[in-house]
Each structure stands twice: as structure tokens, then as C-alpha cells.
Length: 118
Image 1 (cartoon, one colour):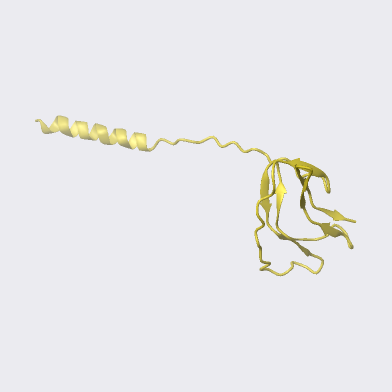
Image 2 (image 1 turned 30 degrees about the vertical axis):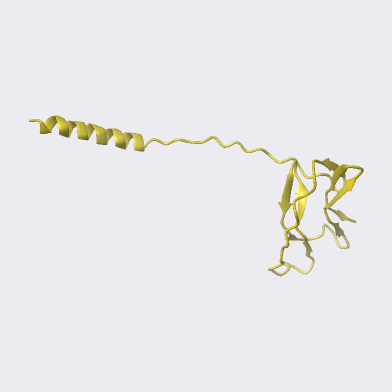
């Protein structure tokens, strides 16, 4: 007769464990939208120099005859991020890509967003 209460206890514990293990918890993830890129050629005062350059090798060929390779660079999006190199098609024939730049003037760090020059 002592086996019956022990069996009920084990069954109750096993049922409780199954119920608890089936619970689902969810984390709330908050995505913050990065600020839009700086207008073409505009100087923006930033809080420090860009990240070190990453040497990238162009491993794929151009997707078309009109495309040019734009080198990877540190770009400012409210903080420094690395923008990998990529193929891009000029907006019109004869357009030239002016790369992103960084300068240090009179104790101030300045970022200049790249743009297409017409």
C-alpha cells in the first residue's frame, strides 16, 4: 500500500515537469533605426577617427560592363560602421564616385559622405 502514494507523487512531479518545460518565454527585441546617411559631400563633425581599414579583395567579377567597384570604408551612422566594398552602377554615364573621406581639422574629427559627381 505504501507504493501507491509514492507512485502518485512521482506521477504528480512528472506531470508538473512536463507542464513547466512546455512554457514559452519571449524576449522583447528593440530595433533602433540607424540615422540616414549624410547628404552627399556634407561635412559632419564626429566623435573620433574611423575604424581601421579592412583590406578587401574583389573576388567576383563585375555584374555588368557599366559597374565600378566602390572600396569598403568606415562610414558614420551615428557611430562608425564598416561598409563593405561593392559593385555599383553610376546613376548616369560619366558619373564619378567620390569616396567617403575623413579629416581632422583644428582638433575636430570630420566625416564627408561619398557621392556621385556629375
